[in-house]
Image 1 (cartoon, rainbow, N blue to C red):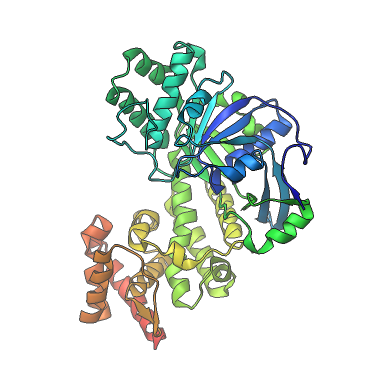
Image 2 (image 1 turned 90 degrees about the vertical axis):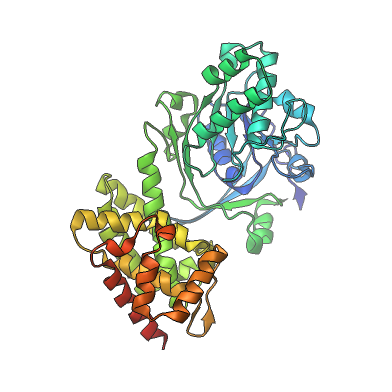
Length: 470
């Protein structure tokens, strides 16, 4: 079987590097790099990606050996049909590790065709590090690296207005572009760089808030050999992604002329306000997950796919989203229903084994952010309780009892929270336990016992679940 290289795969087209990408992980390779690959094929974008390794001091040997090439497997359901496709991604040129060759990293900032910077350094990646004292040495933080790269670009092009860039952070934090800009500018002051550079960054480097959504499980362990036989190449970098994808960029629509992904039928949108899309994702996708997990786990289910195929949980999920979560929101119902249908289709993906225990991590804080707003907004709008979300709340509290039907629940949360529930369920009967838990302001940022009828309804559902336990 052949090694995957540009010569052997006859991928000899040379395109200028237009995109610098902080991050070499599965998500960007299965999302942004794929989008750029499609733009190269079907539009005049004509630009390649140079990756920048942000973690670790090992060389990006495999990426360099394959000259950036890898296969993307798109697998799952789309519009009720099974999708199982393989695409060779040619948009990535290679990878640079700034810890091993800092000068080569800075030289990337001097490439005249560079117009875009994309990043995914995890939710914890956008931070300020006091120990990064100078752009002369490799900064530890991603914003520090970005500031150093921009400074090299500014110096090389003598502050030319047209050499600014567009920055699209994909980290899953709110206002990611604003946050990244704030910390990047903080470095310019921390390093006592000239005011003209600070002004250049502020005026000519454009940071955009974004929201991304795609499940990219990564290397397909069980099918890798069969896929390699099909493609004819060994490819340790192959990555799997679901068909669904969504990228909202808070920017003028005119930016789409430079980054024309939305012209190809790809779900990339340039919008005035990200908040409705963030709310949609958090309440329907994340809220659907979080509301379903404790109830499904108590029923003996362990994987998302098998949970949504269970008739009871499928009906629960459908009613919770359609009858309670969507009516609690202020967005066009048709758009929300389309997104909800996509979500359920994604949950059924036969190629992804998404463990319920993984979603259950930190369930108390997740419920507060993802489910509780829908529950409370529903009550305000309908002046009645949403029965399925109440049922989910009860299942969550029973789940945190720690055991159910003689089996330990996979509790992974702040030890203070776990200890609280352990003592609570041992000391009190179900009604009092629910009342105490709903009154914990530190959990919910409010006293939920004052919500009319909520404590009684959750208690009744919790007692039902405990009776079913036997």
